[in-house]
Length: 407
Image (tube, rainbow, N blue to C red; front, top):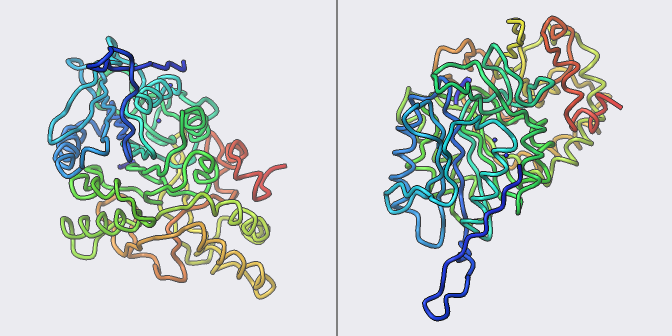
């Protein structure tokens, strides 16, 4: 979305049978999809409209499924709440209520909320959509450190019920820790936030979800087409993600400018280990070139540091290797492309950008040879001026060790 999720608390819920008043467990649904709305920031004005779209979409979701939202917006009149969206209505949950505001980006609160939802609305499979700001893997030393700019990970919450972007974030390693402590892994994680589709995030979340769906670039402030897309999130098709991406792209183009869209992809975490091994063989080649100068390379946005410095980032790895791999890399590159196909199982290109964000996709030679639908970080001298320095903070990611960027 967008410029650019909690002490373990398990609630035992039960209902009494009409026959003997003995506790019974909630009925097991086919799938529960959770929307985690972190809206206490500059996206606050978009949250009510998206919630309305989600509620309308619930009319098309049958009774064997659950659509549950955690809603935290910039409001002093209403505390954060959990609700099931059902038959076109917002049914607020009374089992876990909040009497005061808190940071939606606090890992402990997130774990509490998601654990509760999974136990209150049990299902054979779970999916989650992360609604909010995002900056992919880009992190600070503290998982919810106060920052001056909207440039960190996921879900900034300003803590003051205000519509501004100075607050606390949850970094991807902290998010992975939260997810790993939930009752069950997710089938999919969708990122309705900027820069979510990066290989570093996929490697961090590989044991927490099978699929990751989102964009490697910035995405519009008004977010996903929830009315049209959400029913598809309950599909039992093996390649359900294709319908989600196709419908998202179709709706975005139809409702904006001709040929405009957002690059989208689905990463299969079962393929990320092979992809990391293949990338490790080619990373030394990419590290030979300073700042990728003199080549036509695709980048999806900029890193914005706490000190206000900016630098190009979020490079498409397929484009980088097309430009820099040599004949000596032919065998390694063939293996890399095969691994990429098993990792990025579906993608959609974009040839124009939707907003005046400083990144114009018409500048890029976007085609099947240059586009993978994901981004990847490669340490470069230009990042030394940023504080914190991405060349150092990347070492906090498991991906860095997998591809040889750290011991």
